[in-house]
Image 1 (cartoon, rainbow, N blue to C red):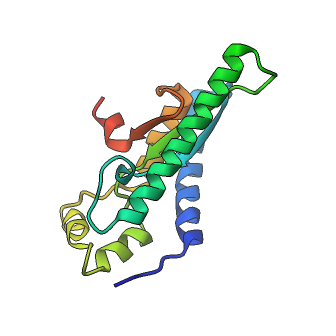
Image 2 (cartoon, rainbow, N blue to C red):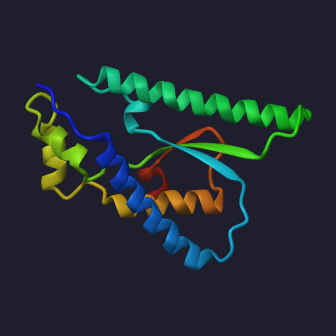
Amino acid sequence: ETSSVSTTTITASLAAALATAVARAASLAGPFCCNATVVHTSSLFAVEPARSWGGYCVAKAAADMLHAVLAAEFAHANAEGEGELPALRTLNYAPGPLDTDMQAAVRASASVGAEFRRMKERGQLVDPFASAEVLVRLILCEKFESGQHVDYYDVLNT
């Protein structure tokens, strides 16, 4: 069984949540004075295998590694004085199991949706706005190593 969810819809939902979180953080943080940070929307499945999700797991793991390598390249070049590269950090942020249209499509799947249906019933899915606020705090406070994989729940539990 397959289902299709519009990438544009998912991106727009995440962008709206992120914009709201940035506005809230900006009102608290005052003027911005920070370096550039590239954020990859990762997943727990980048670091934990999941039955029937092989392609997704591999894609997320590869993207995590790409951003880790990018962080290493910029750190090395800047440490060695190899040109005038801007200060750039990368973050692989796993936002948690977000309560989105994509998640609804997964829950509708007979083959892989059972656990996610249970999470929805138990109120364990993450509000996208709450996850976006955690991401903004991470970036503004620079509480991560460049290239690191950080999960929403890791931040909540620290």
